[in-house]
Image: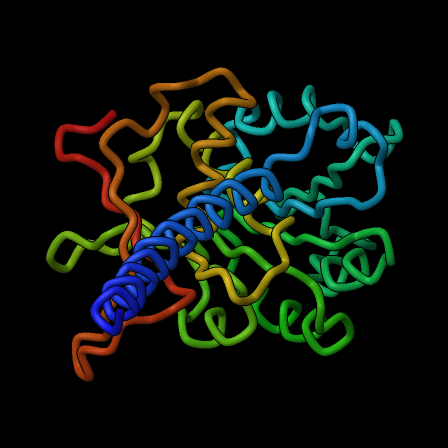
Length: 254
């Protein structure tokens, strides 16, 4: 009789173990699905504008007028009741014939703005990002290919993305490595990533999921094929950054 109880006890322990493994796997699957669902809300809900996105296009990209067109088509411009507020440097910053970067932080003070995305932001914009962070601690700031010093930008941004460097090549000399289509997908991915405000989700994971979502939304499944995004590693300390990422584009281009 005791042997029977022993066998029953062993069976219960084994069953509980496999049940726990299954539950753990299910939990991971649910978490991944939840992340994807939270980053990719339905198109209908997007048309019900409950927040706005401020996108700054820097001087290296302003001539590429097509990069935001698909995003405008999908989400609408703020002036017409849509989600996107666009600013271009220097055009949007000229007041009384002078360039005033403070226009950027003043625009971000609007309570409807919840995500800020900069693409090739000019030098000095980090001061305005600091003002935004101080005034709106909850703001999601996504900085792509900024011309400012990276450490201050990293300190005030939820996500920083730079090109991978080839030897002594400067990022400013490498701004044309992405096609307009690829850049559109990346900008929208930054917007989607900024909409996920759960700080427990690593920026890298958030961006990877957002890139897949961006490709689906824009129906550009092959955009950015071969990209590799990795955390930035400080060459002196060998420490990996959490929010500073590096985009590696395959040699030979796009």
